[in-house]
Amino acid sequence: MMFGLVHDDVLYLKADDASSPAFAAEGCARWTYPGMRGATVIPYWRVPERLLDEPEEFRQWALTAFTVAENRKKAKGKPRAGKAAGRKPAPKKRAPNTAAKPAASRSPTAAAKKPAKPTKAKAKR
Image 1 (cartoon, one colour):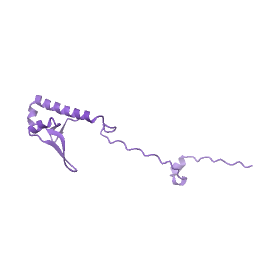
Image 2 (image 1 turned 90 degrees about the horizontal axis):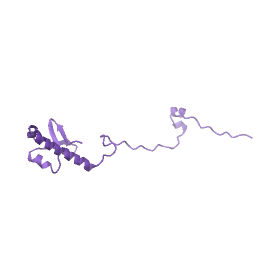
Image 3 (image 1 turned 120 degrees about the horizontal axis):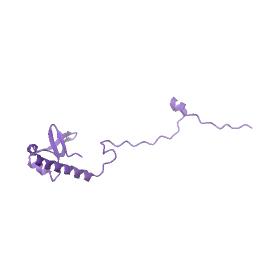
Image 4 (image 1 turned 45 degrees about the vertical axis):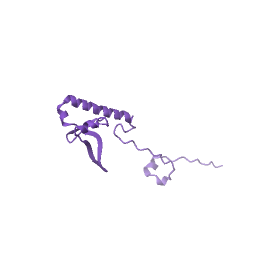
């Protein structure tokens, strides 16, 4: 669960609709990064410089950011398989091709590994 980040030696804390006005009132900016379709803005705000010298007030802001992240996580519910570890889900397996191939089209090693089926010999009378 992520409630803050550091980028270029600047600390940012996560905010929501209720806590964002406090950051805006302090003159703080939101963290943006260049995306493929222009600047992408995410809900992290630069921590006011004055808080770095006021540990008790900084603690309150950090706890608020933690609560925002916690609430966001609860709202999203459980992650899907593969998402929790940051991996993409495994691709779906295709059904094997069960069509019989003539012996000539198989590789020599595959033909060597599979013994030939015994044929029933007709008894002569």
